[in-house]
Length: 111
Image (cartoon, rainbow, N blue to C red):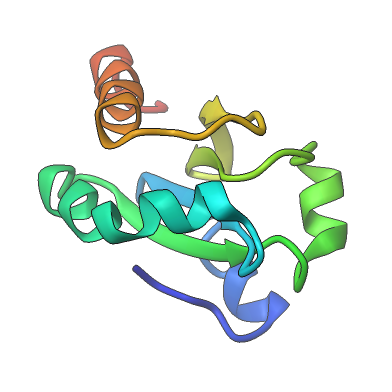
């Protein structure tokens, strides 16, 4: 999991060609802490995605711009285009996240 230290670093992952999962979280979020131990496994099971952890509180303007009002939430970009989102305030399980990523994989890549 990549954890950017500034907005410029975070922005560098938006427009490149890789499928990138932006995982919005916060330290105080119980549902975020619930899924945190499973993230290395999720990353290992989805090697075709790059994972970026985004502290929603540190990047609040970005979260607002991307309509992230509930966490944990995931937004997937490829070549600067959104190709999937699992955005709500509900707790997410490992299987829900893997199913979400599999559904994006089935749709194919951005041309």
